[in-house]
Length: 63
Picture 1: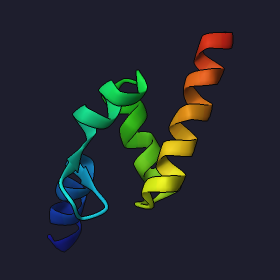
Picture 2: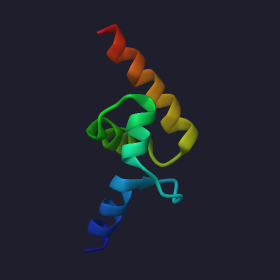
Picture 3: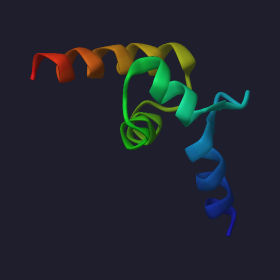
Picture 4: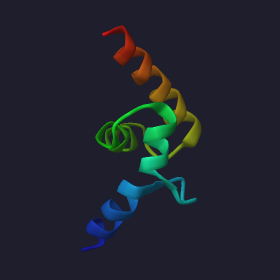
């Protein structure tokens, strides 16, 4: 299915540049599942993703 291919690609990369979820998770101190959730919630814009990751990390450290 077309959606399955998109979902598979989407879960590993964003922005079309091969920036994978493992790197993004390590960069921001998040789990891979949290990163996947951010991809789905925020979309593929790098600036918005980085900002959302910073906010999520701040919330996690306060808790």
